[in-house]
Length: 179
Image (tube, rainbow, N blue to C red):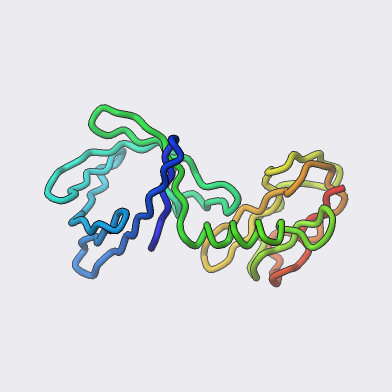
């Protein structure tokens, strides 16, 4: 699976990670293949990268471990070799979903949030009459075993909620109207 790791400097690095049947991990970072494996030590991760051992402590969850959000990649704090830094990590799938939401604006009409994919509504995070800010999470839709948090494209008041938890929706289905 391909991930995009963005540092606070704005630099972005593509990282390809494949779990091999042998238990090893094939990693390609910015086009360079690295020999790697990792062991979860319950609170930290010990990684061997090109025969160098690095212990990592992480704050937050990497993509795919927290339900994720298509609209905003998760921020992950990493402590390695006595240095702390923060990155945003986004899977290729989440990036594609984010691009689809961005190209449609996530809307079918003025202030209407539509489902960018078929799936099942897991959570409705707002109620009619709620005031919401642009970027606020409104609905969580599960598609292909991934939780996708769908967010408001603009600020306003929730005029209508069209879905309920457990409901199956098609791509383009109206979810929430904001006025």
